[in-house]
Image (tube, rainbow, N blue to C red):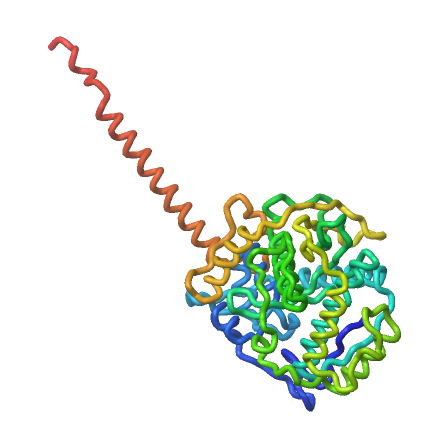
Length: 403
């Protein structure tokens, strides 16, 4: 296995000469999205859990360490909110534990690690393309591959993600699987499984798009919304764009020390982007079939967090629904564009609020509480009115008396 190691490039907070790059927090979801050259799969499916929590995390720069986040946020409605720092710390700990579990799973499948230095934008996309081709080849040849990078264009945005696992299927394409960790000993409810399912379906769409782009082959069972793309135009890179010398050296070393679908001798002396695409095409084209790259049958594996050894709670199998995914994407990108306001969780899943760092002061909860209070007062007034009319409707008890 080989990993990218960023050398001269810096992202988010790490800047040259020890300086720290600081940006003012975004004021809206739309402003946050407009700042980013790419979106992650996680960012796109996160609103499916709660759009208000997603907005608050965006405004608080949740990608930063807790100590560097603002103490409070100002929402687009003008309200000031402070998070529960204890719940934020708990969430960070959960993320660290989840990362350890994923690392252990990856080492079990791919114990050999080779570092690949990524120094330029060309290196970055060359790495993703070669890694994608190598991992797909490994899944088809050896039955399993983990940490498969994918990228593609969704509703006009460049989206990137890492597929957790691909496994050899029974002739209908590779099985895409994602691993989730839980503190509970029970599997999540069906509504709470939706976010993981959307994530897997979006991975499939990106993988189908990239596979079709690199091989020029459309197959049965692929996502109907996946379409080949001109990578040079989309990435704004020329075919003759050169990879860095460090990247070239490390790729050749990886070809010698790991199970790669090509040898070091097949890698040109001056590696250009078009050479990268040719290498990927050769690795994928030798294994093309009539079936889709990714099967429509998918699964999410749930592991109990903190259990030693890891305790698999169960596997939830489902089938990809590209039209349901497209409806979700239409709604979510409308939110990203500012075409609609965030929506809170449905009333039957308000248990999610218990774990939210923004529970106290959440605008959606306060609006629902105000609505419920108004409805209660309206019902009380209605009962009082009914009682009054009932009193008027009583027969006059004095009417039958003889005077």
